Image (cartoon, rainbow, N blue to C red):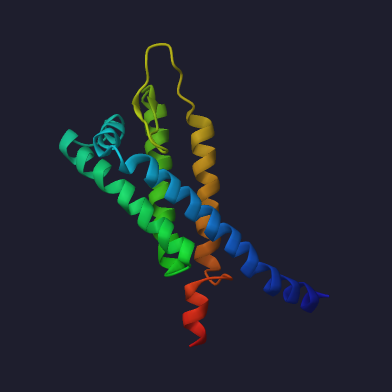
Length: 162
């Protein structure tokens, strides 16, 4: 009975990992693509959190889309999956902490996760709870890949066979 379950898990796990890897790749690629065309806006979104100096927020905001796209490409290809999952997990933890911090301090901002971000107009209400839950879901995908980095249709698997 236990052997049968283990066998089923060994067959299913790589495909679950493939879904997690491709899903997380899509998130990073979309997030980066929505910001890369307007790096100044990405910097303003980071600055809206009021955690660091304006100049540092601009640098981080300008670099972030490229980091997100790089993570997306690595995950899409299945190359250095555990490393990409680890960086993803760390970045997502920072995002969750940043959103929670903005919420706790009563800031009214758009997280800037998928493009526009920054201060909300008067009367608009932030949606911090759903944003945190969404990012925690993405964090679970990254955690799964940290534990089970071997997936189907990946360069990692191809290189391991050589």
